[in-house]
Each structure stands twice: as structure tokens, then as C-alpha cells.
Image (cartoon, rainbow, N blue to C red):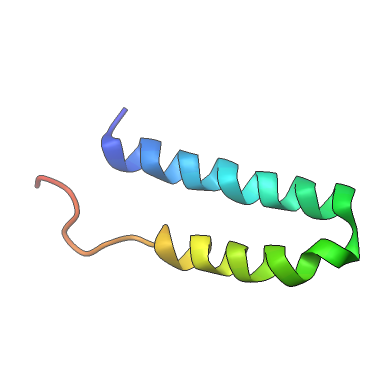
Length: 53
């Protein structure tokens, strides 16, 4: 498995944890979880020419 795939799967797990936390913590935590999820989403975006080829 390539490094990019592992990194992508890791960020996916982080976003899923944020979703589960939102379900269990309720609407009080959304003020914190939504900006954190947006930062993760943009931080995990594809980088140009990130591979070896």
C-alpha cells in the first residue's frame, strides 16, 4: 500500500471519529467539531506531484 493511500485512510478515520463524536456529544460539540473537520478536510486534500512518478 502506498504512503499516500495510508495517509488518506488515516485522515478518513479522523473524520469518522469526528462524526461519531458529534453523534454522542450532541449539538454542543458541533461548534468545535465542524471547524476541526474542515481543517482536516482541506489539510488532507491531494497535493500536486506528491508521488514519485
